[in-house]
Length: 167
Image 1 (cartoon, one colour):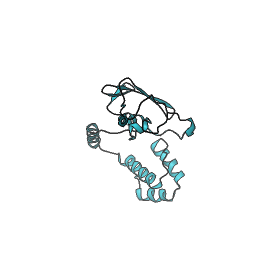
Image 2 (cartoon, helix red, strand yellow):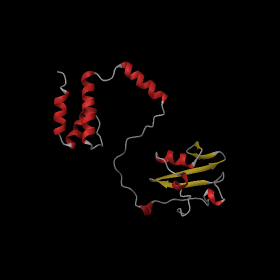
Image 3 (spheres, rainbow, N blue to C red):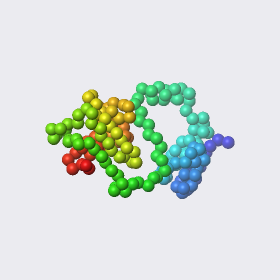
Image 4 (cartoon, one colour):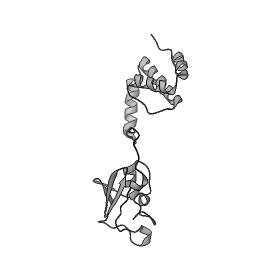
């Protein structure tokens, strides 16, 4: 029996967010963390219609794969269930005796920067042509901070190398 998308949309609009989340799990086979009703309705309607009509054509899938190969796609892992965060007193930042670059004592090869971030110890070695973190070389501390956090950071701020940083 063909899908009546208008009837399904009207039914989903009357559902609560919790009901939509349950339906999402049924349709997609995995739970969602979203509580945005409009987004859930849109995603459910799309998937139900794709399941009914067969989804994307093979040609469209190939073209999407070609485009994806040519672009720099940032892929994030799904968020883990909410975890208890450490109180600020438990977060400790260590640093070697390094001054910020403007103070006349720039970072020199051989220094090791150490920082605790989300329960993980970050060790960065200063090498002649940049910085080394987990076996990979980076041109800047900002690039290292981005690799660690997934977000843009000023590297000197992230490693507390600015005036008044943690000792």
